[in-house]
Image (cartoon, rainbow, N blue to C red; front, side):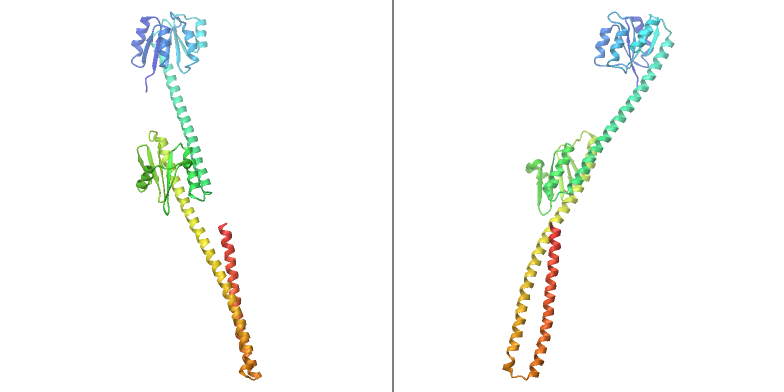
Amino acid sequence: MEKLTIWVVDDDKDYGELMSEVLTDDYHLRVYENAKDYEAALLDSHPDIILMDINLPDKDGVTLCQELQGHQSNIAVVFVSGMNTLEERVRSYDAGGVDFVAKPFEIKELLFKVSAVASYQQKQKSLMHAENMSRNMAFQSMTESAQYGYVMQFFRQFFLCNDYQSLADAFFDLMAQFSLNTCLEIVTDKPEYFAPAGMPISPIETNILELLDKQGRLYDFGNRTVCSDKHVSFLIKNMPMNDEVLYGRIRDVIAVVVEGVEARVMDIRREKAMSKAIIDIKMLLKQLGKSISENDEKFHQALQKINADIHSSFHVLDMSEEQEDYFASIVKKNLKQANSAQDAFLHLQRSLNTVMSVLETTSD
């Protein structure tokens, strides 16, 4: 167990020497013979226990104890005095003293009382340490909760990003919440580079991203970290290497973030490809529909001409009425079949128009 520190404040040199002899083995001990030296020492260090004389040459011990309670209430004061009266004891307790030892005293009595106070102080220290740890853990948990909240907000926001610039802006907003200075590379058909607030990215940073994006998911150098996936890399220029806890937490966060950005980049890429494919299909369908309409018109005109030419040629062929009727029935039958083919063309055109309407709705 850690040794506690005891200060003896008493103008009796013999008493000071006695305290040094009996307490030094178990405690860190300092002896002050007047209030002035004691107050000067109190400016830059603090004891756990003070054995305080009431009657000092330059200041009253009770007054010193009262002043101490206003600033260092965790210091236990034990009054040691030859003025063993009820009035002095009441004054001592009112001033904040934890015990009173009357002179002359038995060494065993003093050691017992000091030991009891020391035990109490040790317990207080343990409680304070546990409280500080709990407070720090609670603060850390709240900090982590807030940071993970930023990440969740980012994931909700990035589904609304339909291009790489808006995705980069959302990414830089998230990095700002962690006070991280970053730049971003997105590689699809060609590399694209992004920096916060539309600032240009330096040539050396583009070079670093090109060289290190194949060094694994996380690569540290100096106080910088490159985090990479297949199509996404970003450079963190102020990684908190000296704070092990924060550094570890940020590494966990960016490892998740890079996967999310990678997935959204692929979604945007697919959406762009799908949009282009829809535009190409719409143009093709439009051309096909136009071609069907034109051919249908030509086909209809050709049938009308054939029908007219056949009927006008009956008198030239000098056929009997029976032959004309027979020949006309054959023409009529085949024209009917041709009209069925024309209906099929019209049905195909209506189907193409339906597909066009669906594609237009999908691309909006």
